[in-house]
Amino acid sequence: MLKQCEKLALGDKSPKELKKKLEQYQERLAELQREARKLEIPVIVAVEGWGASGKGQLINHFILPLDPRGFTVYTIKDESEEESRYPFLHRFITKTPEKGRIAIFDRSWYRRVLNDHIDKKVKTGRFYHDLDEINAFEKLLTDDDNLLIKLFIHISQDEQKRRLKALMNTKETSWRVSKDDLKHNKQYDKYLEVSEKMIEQTDKENAPWHIINGNDIAYATLRIFEILIFQLEKKISMKQAEEKSPRPILDRNISTNYLDSVDLSLKLEKKEYQEKLTFYQDKLEHLHNRLYLKKKPVIIVFEGWDAGGKGGAIKRLTTALDPRGYQVFSTPAPTKEELAHHYLWRFWKNFPKTGHIAIFDRSWYGRVMVEAVEGFCTQKEYDRAFFEINDMEKHLVGSGITVMKFFLHISKEEQLKRFEDRRENPHKAWKLTDEDFRNREKWDDYVCTIEKMIEKTHTKIAPWHIIAGDDKRYARIEVLRIITETLEEVLSKKGK
Image 1 (cartoon, rainbow, N blue to C red):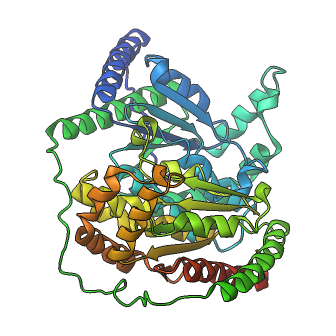
Image 2: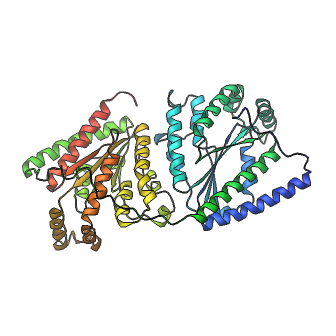
């Protein structure tokens, strides 16, 4: 594809004609930015290409007519030490734009499969694995109505060498040429081969590549304007014709019985509970220290019925942990800022770096439970959420994070009893709301969504643990036991 890069097509147009055409493009692009903002279309422009191909200069050209309050430019360098402690997509997902805004990446997530692989900064053999994760990431974005425009600025080896030399000969610009730039020019054929593979594997209908001949900056500028204008007009037209999506229709023909198979009669006497509590908390204290030293990140998800015992289980867990090495995230209704992003965005912000534990009191699974039952998501959003969640957890585990998921199950009768206890206890009454009782009326709807959730997202790499919760003591010990055994297994494995 790069070897057959489009030819220059400026023809015999005079500088005056080219200037007039550019002015027309600038006007139109500014109009389209305003339209996209009104329609709340998030736009992402990823600019890739050779060193010294003019990426920065071209970005400056096409942002000139835009309202600067509506876009952000991110210049992507090598991962910092802090960034390297997170999954590699973390620093990009957290920068995705709000609805109606534009995010422009001067280099992007493709740095991973270009520079990082060529320079052997990542494990050998991960090239196609990383490309698969990038494809899943881009599908997640475009499925969520992001317009993703990918530009690759292509120049010849001789042109790159000439530009690097020109930059080095001027004091004001010599700092822009790195040793890697010079090395990559000598490795041009290798870089070309990897770029070709990358484009071939990630040139998708939802996120196609646009190859720009960068040997002539004037041509490249006009070509980029044409692409941006065409893609924005197409997206805006589709958005205007879009029909309102229906709310999810719950499938009541349940083929699984995960919840019914749980023995809710399981109990622990107080003495045995205290002994086991001390035993597991002592173990966890030591395991947490080892996790930190070995830089093993962990995510623990707690889902369950209202009054199911999530808070009590989390409290017994965190009592054993060093407060500097964990954080508990409670998941309330999303804020205005969070609603302006993909629903997974607010969770990515809170994923742990190496050596730390992130504990979620409710999580991304709200999309396929409460949002589905209450009609806060559409049928399309609900249907694809299972794939998005599985892909995300696959990426997390693939990056070295251990993911544990718990669903605390109680009977409808036990829930009512706990509600009544809360109402009569002045120290616990604050936990009880009218919404809790309204949710009880939809118990059967929640059973349907929970069964489907477990069926669709119970995977080998991130399995669900359904905990019998009618007896709080039994539930707390069972959670601690599973966490302890899982961490022991993780720490016994060799390598990263």
